[in-house]
Length: 64
Image (tube, rainbow, N blue to C red; front, top):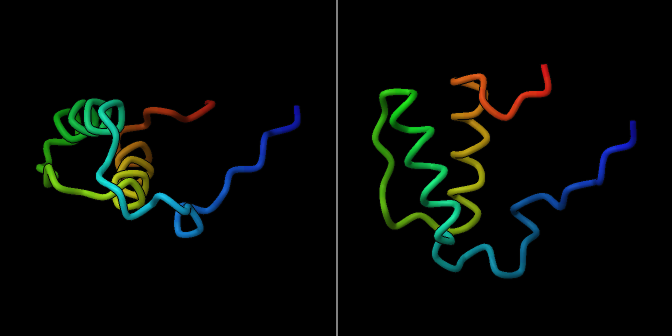
């Protein structure tokens, strides 16, 4: 049951680039489920962190 270590988003070399299409799509889904709004102009790092927050809030992406 080993997990692949993930690089901290703050260490991403491309983290200040605009979020990717898949990030935007998933973030939109999570935001809709959570009943919140998210900006369209997030960076990759900001989107990743927001996705993590919304996954916890909605229960999505958990291994339970």
